[in-house]
Image 1 (tube, helix red, strand yellow):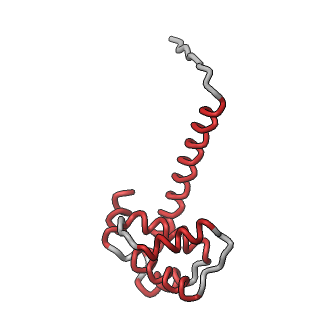
Image 2: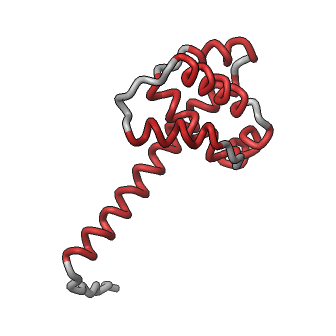
Length: 124
């Protein structure tokens, strides 16, 4: 039994947009898979080890992990949103010591938040 496929010509702009959406979806899936591993590793640690690991993260990894945990938590924090927006708009800008310390503290608290823990269990 053979299947015949039909092709349809679509404007290039539509084809490009569809491809961009597909690429974005694949990138988001890859990002989520990578961050899931990182957060699971943090959850497997005891409290002190987890805190030390969070505090030793470089800025880019800190922001990625914070974004992932924040999205999982479903919370609404203007501070987290502003830091994530700031680093998204200008990724090379170094956070101030106070911003970095606050981001680390927020990440550590989010990782231990029951909503994140239960969301991680649902992802498995």
